Length: 352
Image (cartoon, rainbow, N blue to C red):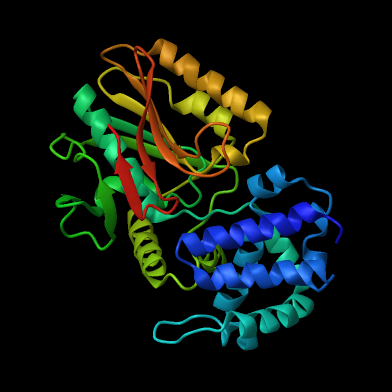
């Protein structure tokens, strides 16, 4: 395939995977880039992006779609030869052997893998709550009000339960002591406002195509986007899925702009929080502008007795790498960066 940006995107994502703790996926993507340059089986899967430029390839997370499609096939048990080459607790995996099996699997299951890749990634990484929860603590501390929490692009809604998890921020623990979903985060900076009174009186979520946790295929899709050599992450998301099922979590199928305009206006007696994580880059520019207008309109309606907050974990504006937690709080509209973070919440550098 004569698109050097595709090879560049694969090699860049390979490096990111290694930096973020998945050497298996890093090596797999490097081998996939070689296969792409040689016109191998992966070429057909990438046909929809044959003329796409580098920035859009990164924004579309094309490399992660490929990795997710292969991991989904492994988790399904429908290709035992491929599954036998993937990492398991206590068993090392050889990426070179895995890629040979993956090439064969791509030929056998091309239509299935291509169909999986038509949908943007929905990682629903639970440890992103370790980045967002300190923001909620700051909001609760600064307003002294109960919280109405509304998440857009919530996938299956696992991060709706952020205050029901157990966290460790450096030497300080916070959250439900009995929680099965626990998170150790490498924390630097001052402590978050763990003494703030947190009461969530309303919560809701939307997604363009929400994950239905009662559907085993959709549950598997969530697991597929967790990197297969990161067993702690896999254990954590399984526990979070169990919790969400027990609580009957529901995510409304809706457009983020229309839904936010309809449900997230400020109300007296509570602070209304609209929040999201690793979502903004997947929106077309016109949708970004429309949602920004809705948020600004809600902010303009805010009062001291009915404040409105926009909390998000996203790459810094105009950048494709790095991650930060940013908060805008109305009335006043003060906008500030609270933290720099690992994309999966493994570390947080608290700046507030």
